[in-house]
Image 1 (cartoon, helix red, strand yellow):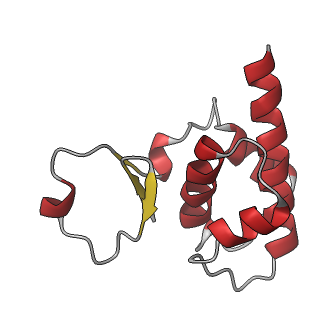
Image 2 (image 1 turned 180 degrees about the vertical axis):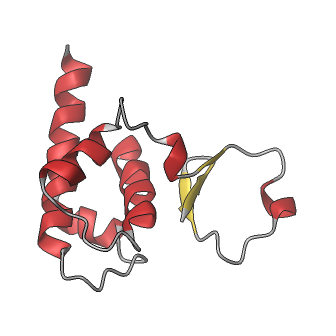
Image 3 (image 1 turned 90 degrees about the vertical axis):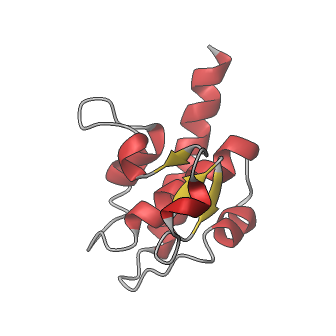
Length: 111
């Protein structure tokens, strides 16, 4: 998953010509090791990742959700992450991490 113009899209079969001239954000565009995005930090805090295979797609999908809805319900978070498959069984921690990030981002915006 990547964000194309802020919307999550599957990147595996996407040709470069379909995104020419559009804003594309990958997991590398969210944050860095010394300045992680609140989502990345929340995933670390909740120990939401295990193997890492699904995390980039989950993180960019969660970012798209939080960009359009700063206080999503757990059901809205689960729905936004439907296209991402995690086989490690971290689902509850993933949901908690997105909730934690949403709260942190709202706190940061209120300052």
